[in-house]
Length: 366
Image (cartoon, rainbow, N blue to C red; front, top):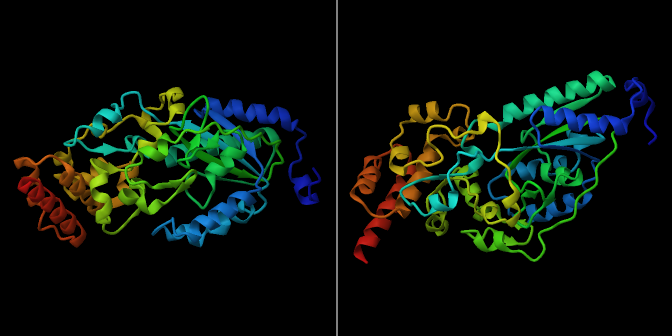
């Protein structure tokens, strides 16, 4: 590769780049990452798919997807000088997590997406990626770099796919043949001209289990997700009222949805995490809906300290649980819990509680 003079002078240490890649992968494993790979920054094919996805308004109210569309497919614009991306993945499925399939059949319980049961992964992964970048600098000399963990407009799954960490499945999640899909991704953008990995073969085949299982039919075609229908979007990203047409299908899912991953055959190879930070906190792996609905705003803030859940705020938390309570069997305790907040100061919360109470009245009349 012919590098500009300023870049040739910057990397003064003479290192064997092929050997360096192996060292980077080894250092990554020592830092707790299960796999590290390198990719170039050519995302033209993904840019076309992203543009088509945005054109169809599948991003819903996530306006930032539209605003930063070009940055996502041009890493060199997001961080000047970038020619390579180091992608890393970290398993997050806790062994103590209850079986979600069983939890979905217990309508008095709430289901929280497995990734959000423990501490928020962003800071921890970012810190470890920073450590990895410093180790690379100590060995290879000063380099331009920037670390990202779901913190900027980055096509992380596309970059990880190019780096050989897996393939993007029909549900649009990244799948690894040896580890399934229960993992987080993070990146180091760098100007270091490292050798790149090779993409792996797509092994979804004729399987459509993820498409068939989706409660709201959000996977509108293989490899195409309409976020506006996705329960993860509805319970996390959507700031306003949840469309009534999706409320019954949400069941007892109160933060995110893992159904498409639960049925993926490749997740039989998923490995439990060894990270203590990802262990469930405050009983969120098997929570009672009424108990969660009783949390005051102060209790919500205290019990979601350091958690990804905190970002939705107390009002959306109550909104989501009200829907789940509306889908729960009619009991005196459920009705009492709903009435206890029926005069809430948030019109959105009140509206979802009224919907839930109407559901129970309708069931009693049948």
